[in-house]
Amino acid sequence: MFEQIYREARQRVVGLTMGLSAEELARTVLACPEWTVHQVLAHLSGAASDLVTGRMEGAPSDEWTARHVAEREDVAADDLLEQWNAVGDKIAEMPRIPFQLALDAITHEADLRAALGRDRLPDTAWQPTLVWMTPRRLPEVSVKTELGVLGDGPITLEVDGYELWRAFFGRRSRRQMESWAWSDPSPVDELPFFPCRDTDLVE
Image (cartoon, rainbow, N blue to C red; front, side, top):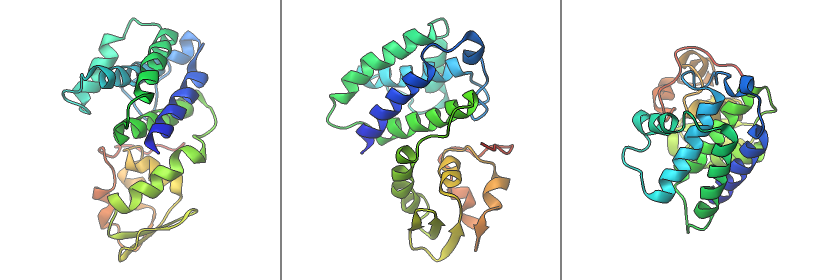
């Protein structure tokens, strides 16, 4: 599953961002407030390169991702995409890839789509990962989404599936998560893989 998710995300991002203007590449990605569109592409290309070359020390820390950006600051965006395609073909030959790489790719694809004013990430990209993640991340919660009920815990939550999926990756604030229809909001702190945002993000 994750190999296909990663490959298709790479193909979509390349199609989405190849040939962007300088203004578009300099646009701040609100979901990643320290990064521009160009810097997100630098990270995606750098993460793929590191996997192929075995340069994974410190992954997935802020220092590791910052190195991708710093090392590629002066590389043209279209060249970054070509490099990502080249190492992506090598990744496709691996027997399996880390699921984190696929989740990172579709998360940043969603970030880029919002920053560039494009259509939301296709449902076929994020929904399978939501079904996979929810019972693992929230084992004590029965989550009702448009996909049905995920999990069988004693706490109940009714929420839009995409909102939950974005929150798993720190793209929603604590206030936003607490505003959902919980029977008990105590699992909020366990929900995101990464620290939640200080401010609301509406996409």
